[in-house]
Length: 260
Image 1 (cartoon, one colour):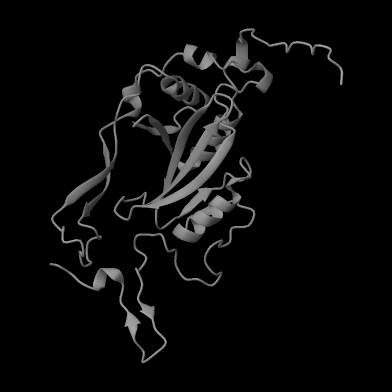
Image 2 (tube, helix red, strand yellow; image 1 turned 120 degrees about the vertical axis):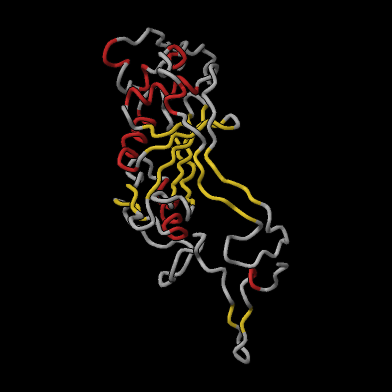
């Protein structure tokens, strides 16, 4: 094996100007430090209103069932938090960059416990995800998870889909969240952009009944093909398990006892 010294890697540190600085850049022209130099969003408050309540929880179980915890008077409002984006770090720069690339796409920007979430309409989801993946100043190349959430009392947005994204280039993580109503549970598939979303979207369909339009093969992945219903929805019955003798059943856990 030769001991000859390998040539030094030539870095490209020239500043990007012109149209390439506005739209997606090629990977070789990416400027990792340029996001911090971007103009910040007009006002962080333009994306942050009052906290958005989603549902109210009482006790351990939902309304209408026995509270086996004995704490039925506990009342907790679940809401999307409302905090301004911090002035330091990459959060404001990435938010401003995405807002410039896909105008009016951000319905809400949620910053809580050091984590950033973009709430977007399903009609703009594909454009937002595409820019987050392809733009060199964003470059969220990896989608490790797609998950569903069901909020029965969030009128018009009962079903939520959450996309977790990671940038290997810039070492950042964020979420993108979109919603759809119970009576029209359709969201565009991101599998053409992130092939890794294939099985995640199938699981979300299986558990929550959210239809991902454009998915190559949207079938159940955990439950049998002939299973009725979607088990992780909050309106899904907790069960009664039939037993094989004397026609007996094991009642659902919320009906076994009640302290009220």
